[in-house]
Image (cartoon, rainbow, N blue to C red; front, side, top):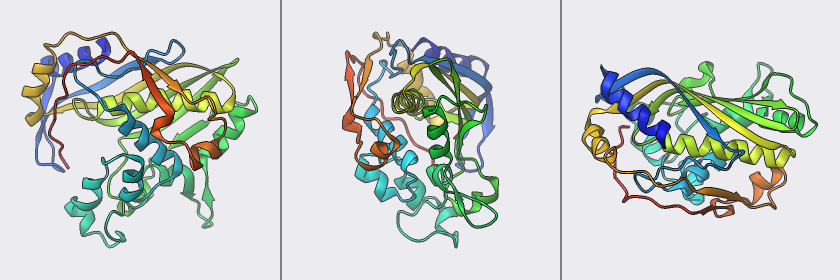
Length: 282
């Protein structure tokens, strides 16, 4: 919480106004932010200064790990964050690659689970790193990346959090996650939850202890229409962080693919201030 609040205040104090061409809304922006989450100590980085709906963030992550390419698939898991990008993004609606209602194209998990190789075959990045880590192997390239510049035009949105690098030291697994762009009031807590859960999940199914997540953000911003609400949120006193419990029966990548739902992740000790409905810029 302190890291989150410190970043918010830094953007307010030091940020520069930038006209965002995609959304048509100005952003108060800073470059470079580094956050850390202690998964080993189970310090779950869920916001307490406003109510945060962690299961939707986990649902989105599960969709990525399964390689989903349709907003309806995400909705079935309890995640509605892709509805607007699939069906209200003017550029995507006019893109000949779009296959119809709810289609997302080759975004995020599609790249992670089915990267298109020159010979027409597909590379499953996630399967490779899970196999290696399960064998105690870290080749310094245990990387899951969704960032494929050659196929940007085939999807509705470039990935914001685009690359996850796993590092194994002894029996402790760490994660470094890279994000090119971050809507701090609305999106950051989703990203924090997903980083934490990703490390916890991969550590559990590969048989290692989780360590820390190192979350690196390049462009951190607050949209102009979010600023008054954020200033109100910053006046609230944080509560202690909750703990996250994963279903211990999640043991393999196949489990994640086939039956795991957000209900397999439960919280202990979550207290929060009331929710704040921040505007979303498509």
